[in-house]
Image (cartoon, rainbow, N blue to C red; front, top):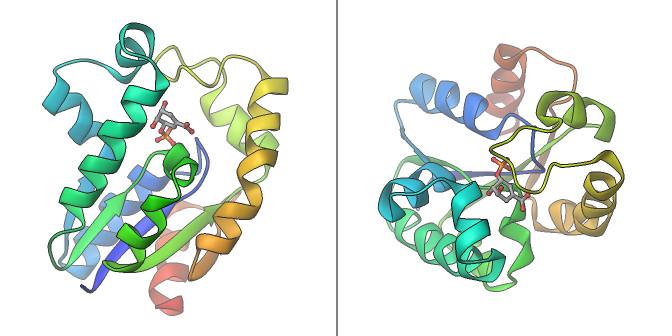
Length: 163
Ligand code: S3P
């Protein structure tokens, strides 16, 4: 228990914020995407191409579950963690869920056409995916933090205050 789990769309800064937050709290930091890549020995992009999104989502749930089985951790999830309903209980049984919210324009400028992000290929699809998930991010969050325009240090401070 007493873990902090960061959720939010691609480009919200979950990894960057998570690393600093963990450091300041003296927690360990884990990134679900990085963990999957290390375990599979492949990039996320390759996993999507070779095995498909559904296979990736299975790995994501398994990895989340493993990482949530610990204490005093900050865990950065991938933007699609809300795609599988079972991930809700896994996260909420493990700690506090924080949604890093940003506007679609800001998020897009951060990840636009990143070749390593298979789901960030064009703005219209990116926006549609965000709209489809928006309510889930909000509903799944214990705390919502505005992470669009602020500096990373400011976002970390906001999270610490909210906790
Ligand atoms: C995804 C987000 C990515 C990564 C994968 C799928 C998504 O993580 O898990 O490309 O479905 O939103 P980031 O949110 O860290 O970019």
